[in-house]
Length: 134
Image (cartoon, rainbow, N blue to C red; front, side, top):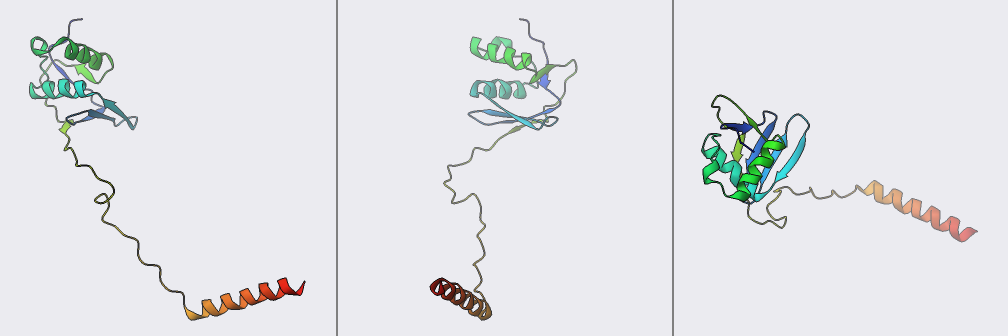
């Protein structure tokens, strides 16, 4: 397959490239597509060249990934140079076990007022006396 000389991400996609994967958000459908590590490398390389197809510098695996990205519509052909403003580099996060995810805490449960305790004792006495009476 002959690849077009200039490619860009589809207009309805927003791409975030991480070292180990690339996330594609479809803003029209609201769906998310997780692309492979190799696809992330190919998209990063395309991003650095401004969309010019670097066919000579791709190995056969990367070339197949590029063809698959074009076939699935993630990358589309274009005639004029356009910036890749819809592609961002993601910041990898460090592992978290819930200690840094949310700095929020629940408010302490307030103590009930004294009249609720008195009402609860009366209700408990009614239930116990009815139970013993039968």
